[in-house]
Image 1 (cartoon, rainbow, N blue to C red):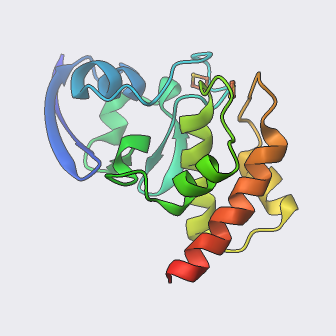
Image 2 (cartoon, rainbow, N blue to C red; image 1 turned 60 degrees about the vertical axis):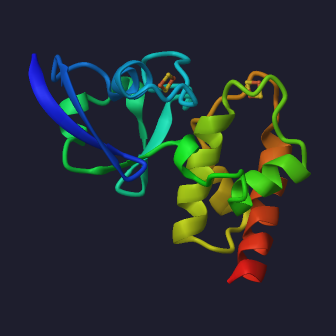
Length: 156
Ligand code: FES
Ligand code: FES
């Protein structure tokens, strides 16, 4: 066991855990944020995606110790009242079906738009590759990312 301090959504959390434990379990079971989901556990589906210093990572396959001292962002940290442009676009276009994959999808969309404010379809497809959605929401996700880009422009 090791004492590890995680910074999640700008708040510090001191936890005592096996340093090799996946970050996903630290976020869900120790920090108590359940928005990040467990899908496959082998970095193949994207359900567990969070941002580490702004970059999407698969938290099911990322040791908690490697996240110490870095900035972790989860879906809960995007906004207080669901007013983040990506969340707004997701609602407007009714993207989620069962919803299970969506927090991971949203976090990758947020990272994409931060680096590429007006992505092409090809850039969206490349950034979202590896996110599986058993409900087949891919076309809506693509549209919602374009819509979020528009919303961000009007907000800027
Ligand atoms: S649960 Fe992490 S990629 Fe599937
Ligand atoms: S919305 Fe159901 S798995 Fe994606």
